[in-house]
Image 1 (tube, helix red, strand yellow):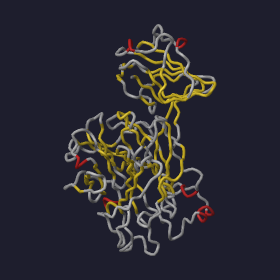
Image 2 (image 1 turned 90 degrees about the horizontal axis):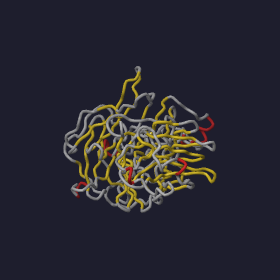
Image 3 (image 1 turned 180 degrees about the vertical axis):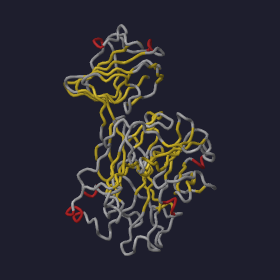
Image 4 (image 1 turned 120 degrees about the vertical axis):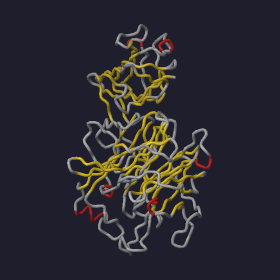
Length: 468
């Protein structure tokens, strides 16, 4: 069967295009680089339980929404008058430096000098998750949409014109058992529907495992029956969040960074627990007895989800404060912060007075690559058709390394003029490198015809391809 990729960007985050990985070639997961504190949760209404972060790009403005939930050590956790969760807001012009504006919208402990946009109901502010719906034809009064709720109330829809002033829409949107997480909503251009991904539970050999389900809607009023996501042959794991949305540079692919939760697993010694103040009144009492990190999932529509890589995408790291339950939970939103860079954000030091949001960086399409060492390796794609006249690659080599490309017909026969030997050697580190074959400066004559690509890598990584 021939795949049609048109002029879409195809990052190698899954095995969709890969037919053969020859000797010496591997499909490798990459890991984002830690860039330091993006936002400290240092206000009393934010506190140690700040979490469930969403980041949206609205033109040249980055908008951040998150739960604030300060711990009052003078009161028992469930006492009447203990602080309740609120929804907070921050913004940035570059995705690096963040500002908490004094909005004056909501009162907290007698003052409205804060960055709070919602103070209730609790079921919503605890898990408020927005999206930006800027498609043509969408009412300006509903550019921003959000869902919030829990298993008791169901998920409700909220809308806003400016992302700051929100109105709840009447009626329950989605009912079900679960929702004890950051449930998310997005427009899926492949399925031409709104998709809500939400927490559910699945019975696996008698254990109630935290799972992800989905439902779809054309109008945000009528929703399809819930369906569990299908992770194929991947072993079941507790996925506490989904954090999935269409990838900004390839919106036909859903990329998610769920928080993986490991109940009953512990790494800290009693001495380390004492050093980080694990059992002090200012620290959330629910941190011991579980660990968390971040994994990578992808989907090309429907309920099937690929877990091509089972290892962690973001590890807890060297800081003992992050080896506790519910730390290392990623934000929803992987966004470009330059032509070559993506930024993602992870909550650290959860439940502790030092809680903060960290920025991490990744090269564009840099989630995974086709890779080979110094001895080299080859990869052959499945047969596909394309549109355009130029083949461009996101690639990186060492000074001694290289990438070469051969074009074959659907049966694997080399096309004259497009042999590996004719390909001009590609050396360097570029996100948009044009491929040429001597006098053959383009591939326009091959557009619309079934072809395969044979890549020859030497001490190199190939992150994505695109025809234009």
